[in-house]
Image 1 (tube, rainbow, N blue to C red):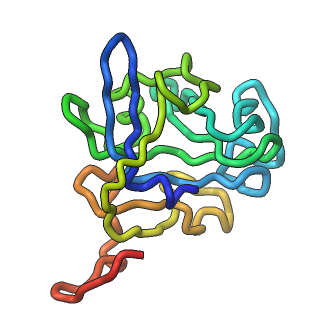
Image 2 (cartoon, rainbow, N blue to C red; image 1 turned 90 degrees about the vertical axis):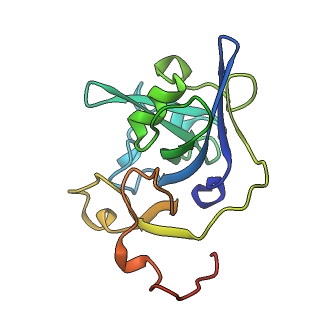
Length: 182
């Protein structure tokens, strides 16, 4: 699901305003076995309850005492997996979106949207059929101390100046060499 979201538009409608950005960087969190996921070990809390619900809902949580983060619940009810939105290429009138906290700030997303269905009006994803570039897959960001999960290739992104972190040079094609999209 994470790879499939790249290139699509994330739209937020509120107070007669329509803000959007193109999804360019996301991370997959794979549930109870994933030591970096909030649902690790099957932990079901008030905070994680949305993740255990039906797919197609927003999981919005507060972190570091200052940032909201947006995730999409992706699996059937009872399987707590989600995709974190890390960065957007901002649409017109949208501020910086190069990090999960910047995405939510730019689109006016906060805890009031936790658990809402991802459909219009409000918060939703649109496939406008825009071509997307080559997909790069890297380890997730900020999951140190999670054992083998630290190195798992679960961050998906397309090359853009708006990424939260640049794509490692070792993954970029050599100058003059053509690389087909994956």
